[in-house]
Image 1 (cartoon, rainbow, N blue to C red):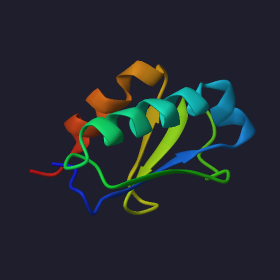
Image 2: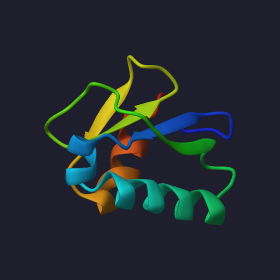
Image 3: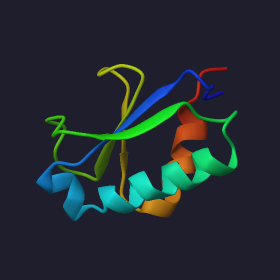
Image 4: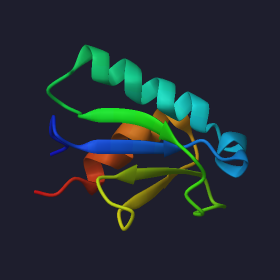
Length: 84
C-alpha cells in the first residue's frame, strides 16, 4: 500500500500537461488532504523525459513511473501498482 512516507511526483512538462497532469496533481493533493495516512509527499516536478502516452507519475524512484490518461484514474492506478 502507498504509505505516508511515499514520495509521489507528477510531471509538469509540456507533454504531460497536455495529458492533464495539472488535474492529476490536484486530484492527488485533494486525496492526500482527506486521507493523510494513505499517501506521502505529493508534488509536481520538471519534465521526467517519459513523454507520450499519458501524464507521468513517479512513485518513490525514477524506475517506478505510471502513465495516467485520465486524471480521475490516478488513484486506481496507484493502488493497483502498490507493493503487497
